[in-house]
Length: 327
Ligand SMILES: NC(=O)C1=CN([C@@H]2O[C@H](COP(=O)(O)OP(=O)(O)OC[C@H]3O[C@@H](n4cnc5c(N)ncnc54)[C@H](OP(=O)(O)O)[C@@H]3O)[C@@H](O)[C@H]2O)C=CC1
Ligand SMILES: CC(=O)N[C@@H](CCC(=O)OP(=O)(O)O)C(=O)O
Image 1: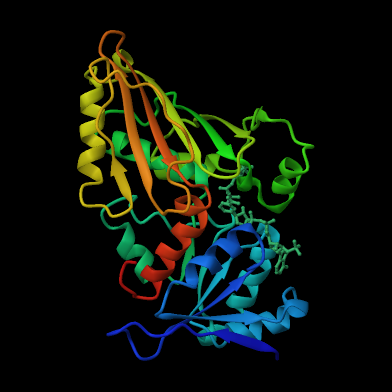
Image 2 (image 1 turned 45 degrees about the vertical axis):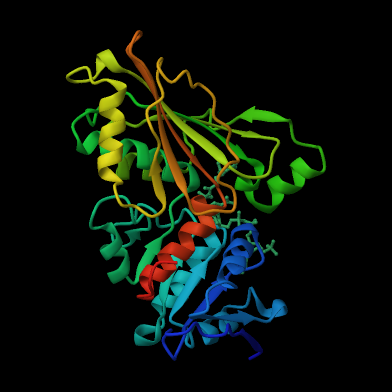
């Protein structure tokens, strides 16, 4: 079998035997992003498959026998095929981190959003199979779950989630259509109420009523905003914008990758947000814009769809699964 290894120089004080990883689908948009990030990880050895055998199940299986963890950056059907291979390997099976949509609500998989609850990171650490969240759900769940847990938002509240993403969120084919000029400059989609991210968004936000989710894609490469508008006088106890901001700040206090921004209201005269500010990072910013005058608020998450929305989150989960320290 034809393998090549990319060994990184060990960090001072790092474990003598680096953890080993194989990225299946390493030449796609998410896979390339993960590989770029892995070049900076001195305590991880990346094992690669020969290009002409990258879709060959036998070659994949032989390589998976040699690694601690396989990261799947594949379309859903191909991810399911690799998971079937892993399941056939018994005790030689590596841990699996899947970036596709295939297993995000599967009960025997851990959901790879370490900030979901105080114990989610330890669940990810202990799991053999972890699903990496979708980019939009990362923003929506980060905003909604603390509201539901704090009793500010009833689980059956009629939630609406609006979002805009850069075109890299659609992978190689969408990137090509924007870069050759054949795609429109901006469009709404998901207008059939069936976007593939809805199940995970509802499940991990602890909502009993299916949200309405209207994403859009615009003519810039990467970065996204996910927003949830709220009429505050329809919520129990009629909370203020400051109450919502405080609930988020409490949940994410001490978090390395999630920042809760100061409240913006009539006093701060804010009112604008662009989607690209966190590109190339694993950061997620949560904003609360509110009007005391009109009892209205909009919660907004800002992230890089290829960072905390995909490859950055995958590397964060990988390090937890391999028992490595935070980056
Ligand atoms: N782009 C994004 O922002 C995000 C994407 N994801 C998820 O990550 C996964 C990958 O998406 P993305 O990187 O965008 O997609 P891309 O289309 O950019 O890349 C997919 C890659 O998988 C390869 N591939 C397809 N079938 C096989 C196979 N059987 N064995 C090995 N390689 C295969 C493709 O090769 P070839 O082109 O030669 O067929 C391609 O290189 C998807 O499940 C997507 O839902 C998750 C979060 C965000
Ligand atoms: C702009 C765009 O098309 N975005 C993708 C989502 C990107 C993402 O998070 O990926 P997953 O495929 O892993 O769920 C979409 O809406 O299908």
